[in-house]
Length: 421
Image 1 (tube, rainbow, N blue to C red):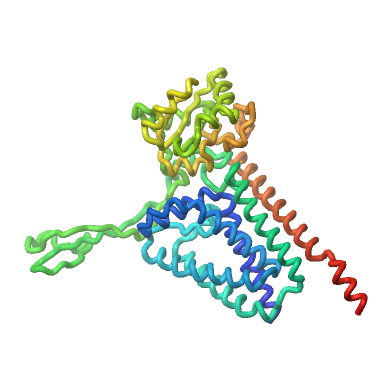
Image 2 (cartoon, helix red, strand yellow; image 1 turned 90 degrees about the horizontal axis):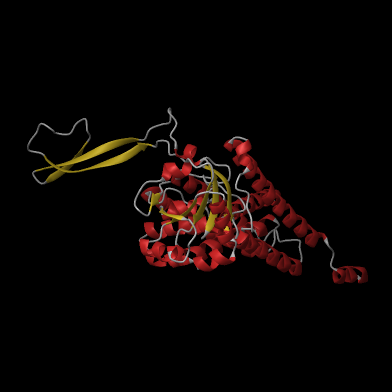
């Protein structure tokens, strides 16, 4: 039984670590998912809590997974795992039935599951969590309480550190379609043999006070005693959805300049989804952004600023910035997907994301011609993605080594007591 319990505890811990980590590396994305939940539940008044809740959930899941994996504070960890699954399971059932949120966000942007797949997955995890909670007392930790407290602090600091770093810079792993090396134009294309969405139309007709549903094959189109009431469509087969669906850029004058931007050999993009949510002019002058724009202007490289702010905000900002920058409007959610920063900087080479920076990571000079042009965009994206994966694995290896050192190292006071005995 102990072996079975240990296997399930480690499995549950590993899944919580994965779920927490993919959220922690992208706190902005997790906050966007909370916004979707609030909108689906008609609780828009709580939007201001989205970012705080995203950080809290990411840290909690990652910490609980770490504690379960190493059997630290197992009573508290097993209770929290049970509580979280008890919360998530009925929530995902509601999503599956209502289909108000198409992706629960359980694994961030790393793994996409259907609502019913998520619910079934949570049923299994809830069962495991109940088992682990039930047997936690029978198989206590072999680590002394002082070390458990130290490891608890270590796990918390690690979890909070991942969230803080990803917020201050860019996600440690970028799972989105605008990651470095991605071809935006290809991301918008639909393959020739891609499956097409299929719908079934329901028609409602009324006769003598009674309303009846029909299909397009059997509705009473020749019987004038029936009166049309309404129609609706039900999705019976999902079609292909391109990774990038809403990349549409509009100039201040209202002109569609999407193709023009993607056709540029080199283009510098400044992204600020909401200008009013940051002291843009201060950051523009103090964090190398002005110097980068000036350098681009000197090299005749076009500079664009994408924003979802209202025209008045854009007009106000243009009065403070004299450089040759073309201001453009775009969808807010799309801009948040492009780069998790406000403001952030993206370098495009013929529609390929050559590089991207949080404004906190800008240096005095950047390379305007990326090495990605020397190879295919698929290879460039794959190389960068693998680097991010290896970097994350290295971070976890360091955490595991530190944890094992703390567990293995002997307590001098304990050794003295054993010798006296």
